[in-house]
Image (cartoon, rainbow, N blue to C red; front, side, top):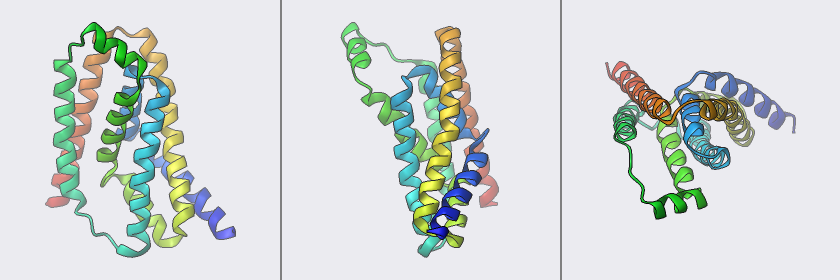
Length: 195
């Protein structure tokens, strides 16, 4: 049990700190201005749990088999697309608005997919792989997942407070800019790794 507790505490601390100011934390803030907090938090948790489970599997036994630079490149281009899509906006009919207010499935899927892509090859994924080479996989997985979700929950709280005070146009442009920055960041990381 001592090994599990050490893995849990170390992983929580490392990933919590690594996530502060990270692009995915900025994404959490952005999503929190557009969607209700619970589906955003659930989407983050699902994506994080899946990515970190893969990370500990790699770290524990498979070695670094994912070509993270190519994944970062694809994710970066996708984020530029998300930014453009955000700027273009979507027109909803009254019926679609009512459905969107009733269901949180759209938010859950959007957040899960975006976070999954953002975390592939990210520093928190690589940190989780590294931690899993030294500590037990379950403690690392649980600690890293909780650490990341806790850091992103802070961003959700801030995003909700900002969302109540900012006009929708400002949020739309801000979200597009954050997606573009995240996309460019991922592309630059990929190019640096490829060269």
